[in-house]
Image 1: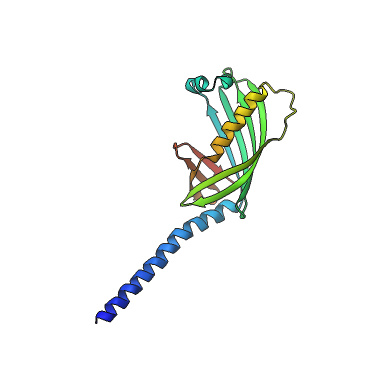
Image 2: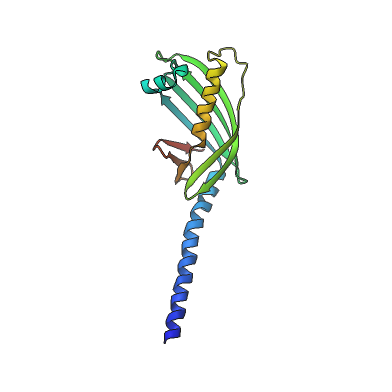
Amino acid sequence: MRINNKRFAYLLLSISVIFSSWLYWGTDVKTKQVLTSREWYTNTVFITSEQAAKTIPELDLINKIHGRDTIKYLPNGTYIKASVMNFYDEENVMLMELELSESGNWELSDNYLLIQPTEVVDTNPKRANRVFTDKQLSMIKELYMLDAQESKRIDIINKHSILLTSLDHGSIILSSN
């Protein structure tokens, strides 16, 4: 009788370990499959605050940034991203358009998307209507990289929509056709 109880306990433990492993690994595998299955798009608007203007006075003439991104996550753990950002002043006049190409590595860990950009390139550096200095453009790229490196919780809404939530509770929706 005692041996049967031990076998039963080991059997339950084994089943529990297998089921827990399936739940744990299955979530990241399914998320990776959805993430790499298509090209993703975002459309964001960032309104600056007076506090931001005081913190970064070099960029105080920017009142709003409208960004459009196209992102492709590849199964080998790399990604490519094309971004177009329009910068506006207080009167909603467009100051400049900036086109960036970003590439790097990504991984999933416990439903968090971890991004490590390796390169950000201005794809149109000779554009005539540049109103920012090289120092200001460098600062914009640095802020862009810092935002890209932030870990984001990933929740699949459906096969065409993914919600990314950063640790400061900012959210972005990735959508696809």
